[in-house]
Image (cartoon, rainbow, N blue to C red; front, side, top):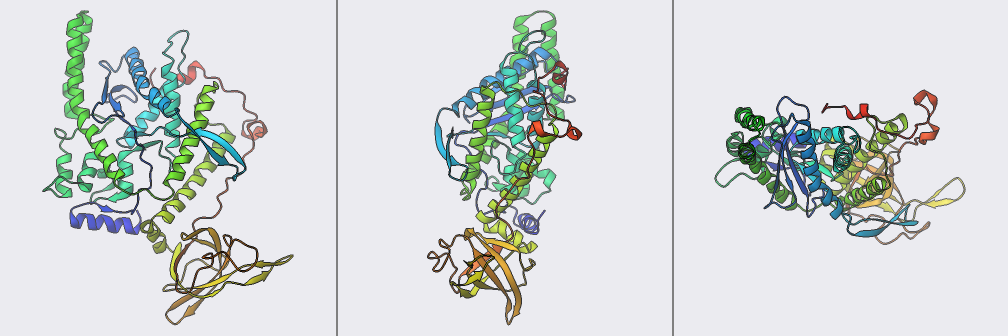
Length: 500
């Protein structure tokens, strides 16, 4: 927890209401997100009990598994979920757009939209990952065959969960994670995992404070758990409802069985409906925040990733293996490191409140331009190069040393190098050599490219060109790391993970 977040939590506790920790929204919120609230049977790793899902807040779809231990019913549940989610994915592929790639040298096509799946909490995300893992390798022919929608859904769920690990991706998110990334409550991080309690702090009902609203949210009668675990008190009723269904099935009494299913659906709806309302309440709160400048760029990257995955599946690509091979794991790690660095930079450059945290840590410094040399030339190895110089006066000494590359959010395309730091009467003077974004290789620079005297600027070590580590192709993997990888083909053993 950063210093500013800790301070915001203290202020929230004092004021009785959550405090913002950002000035803008750093995540894309789709016009038509797919909301999914799963429930599982207690004591089982991946036995779906019910789910409420859909894109229409007024008409949610309720899916119920009357006997979660029944393998056939579990896969029937997955088929029903696929009947909702797969058409939603298709709707995101209705239109395409042209974009430039390879540094503007190539034009490509991608989908103009991408799916966004919203879950209540990290527990729901973990269950969704397990559901995808247990279904994506199922066979559609032969013994124990399943409907083709089952492995296809599992393939997409696994991919979406994998994408959620990359900071900045908006394809699959938890609502509690979204809310706590933008507001600080006066309760602990574990208590923030309660969706209703977090919303109580952020937007308490009229006449109530955040703590009072959060306390009411802990009443399972008014606000049942947001899943995937069920309330232990409700589990007592659930045992009776499932027993009634089993008893009706044992006597082949279809009317009694249908009545037992209706009773089960009615009670499960009461458990899921409050969370459904909370999910859309959270969406409304997030939409009220202005989007950060780079949010659209990250969403464009998500659309590109969705396009590539759609093409891969359409071409008959194999599902994700149980474990990454050596080169694939290294490539994924490099992409994760790159995504973390980019997301940290984007958030800081978009949001002065986020940048303030880096100022406290010494990774950024602010000051006023007190001197400038807009026509400075420096002799390079072969010829003189255009390198303007500015002097920034700061109140405190920057923790970054000479020779360090820094950038300013005001001029993201321009690099500055710290040449010298020296004491002044009322602070410290920092000499910065500028390069890039000047427009020409000799004076004069483009108007506004060189900061003017008296201009207030902030510089940070964040930013720059992000590069990923070079990873060999699969065919070039040395024998010490598994050798060349053969084409992956799923086996029956791969599918025996959690449901059998």
